[in-house]
Length: 78
Image 1 (cartoon, rainbow, N blue to C red):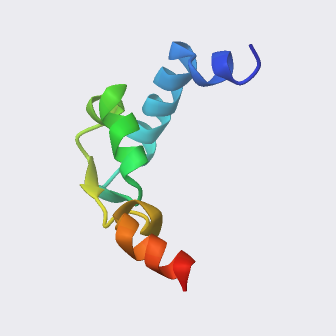
Image 2: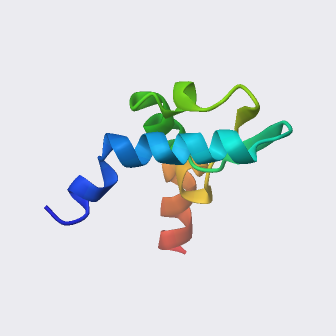
C-alpha cells in the first residue's frame, strides 16, 4: 500500500541511520517536541538505532498534549 510500505522499509531505515551516523561528526542533541514522537521512537526502537553521538531529549510536549482538558473546556465554554 502506498505510504505504509514506503515508511516501513527496513533497508531505507538502515540507510537513513547510516547517513545520520556519517553526518553526526560531533555530538547532536535533538529535542522531541511531542509525546507522540517520543512514543514512536521508543515503540519502534528508533532511539536504539541512532549512533551514540545523537542524544534525544524529551521536550515540553505540544500545547495540545500538555494542556488539561479542564482548561480546554473552559476556553471552549467562554
